[in-house]
Length: 260
Image 1 (cartoon, helix red, strand yellow):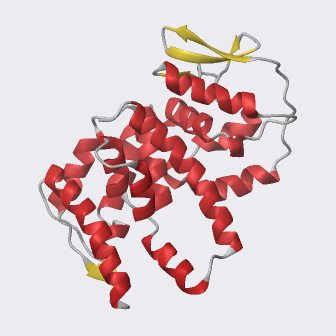
Image 2 (image 1 turned 180 degrees about the vertical axis):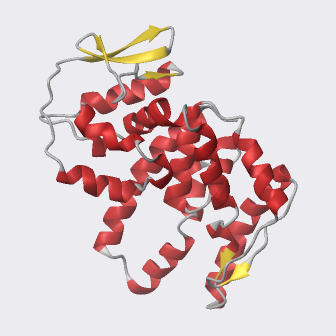
């Protein structure tokens, strides 16, 4: 399985779920070689098994999850594979592999990358016109920024258009410090959500568990939904969004299974 997953852990800081799906789609997929999928409790957590044999990560470490529910969800991904094993359809497995093989060893690097998003968060960039879009952004995004600011002890600065908005260094530092309370698996999930939504704020609020995952997903797509209402839904954009949603849901399951 190393040929399938080896690149997933090589550069997590640059991981993009859509590009990863395209890359995986170009590869020759191996045939399914197992009959049964299960889980077993070990010292390292709840491990996934194929025909009774424990699954290993690309780095040959045990693929183990911190709780039974997550292990069952990962096992379901393996069981859902039919004639071939398609890692593009296994987001939980890929996040877990990245957490075990990469994030555990590069925690600070990945956390720093997420914190940089907080300094340039998508929710801070507002439309100047039309006024209705600006109002929709305000009503949807301001409460989220206020919730994050209450935890971080500093307010986010807003800007119009695409001009860079610099955030207070103390705010970014507070966000970075908050990340030290997460496990490598949770941090990998946070990175996935941040990459997909462009918002470290959305990722943090999802992890805290005070906001519904569906509402945060909708908040991340205010602009996209506005354009779809005006011009109609583009087929390729719809396909990409559906793929991103599966990645988001996988990360959300990890974060909400043990919210901080």
